[in-house]
Image (cartoon, rainbow, N blue to C red):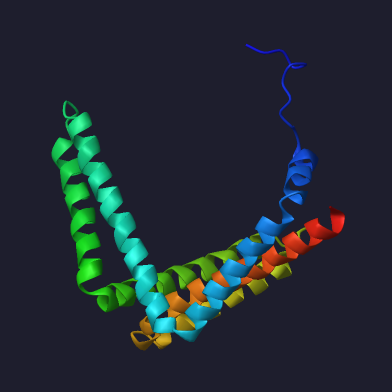
Length: 191
């Protein structure tokens, strides 16, 4: 056990930023990689959609194997067969994703649109309950945008399933890239 005087590890946010300043180039390169990946994804939206569906499929396979493994670890528990069933369902869904990625994209897009509609409506209801003393209009605005986005996805479904997931992935990569490039350049100026 070491005393606080012996510990040389930096504490707090400012020391973490100090460590990043020396690595500004790595942060900048990370941002460029994200940005280029996002632009490539924007160029080929359908391919980006299929790639994002494959990632979901891989996660489902890993989760399914984990569920089955966990079932055998907890064999004495009365719900063994439910754990096995859940794991097998995840594994089957993962393989179906690889077998027919466009069907999986259609289902994921449908669920995304429905989730956005529900989320938007809940934000609007929440906003009207916050009226007193809170900037509720921004919550209404956010809820309206979320609701509108969900409705646009659903109105154009199933065609939207060809591009929505890829578009969201591409936009995320582009914005993350711009963010990391900005952070890298600020760190360079302060180094």
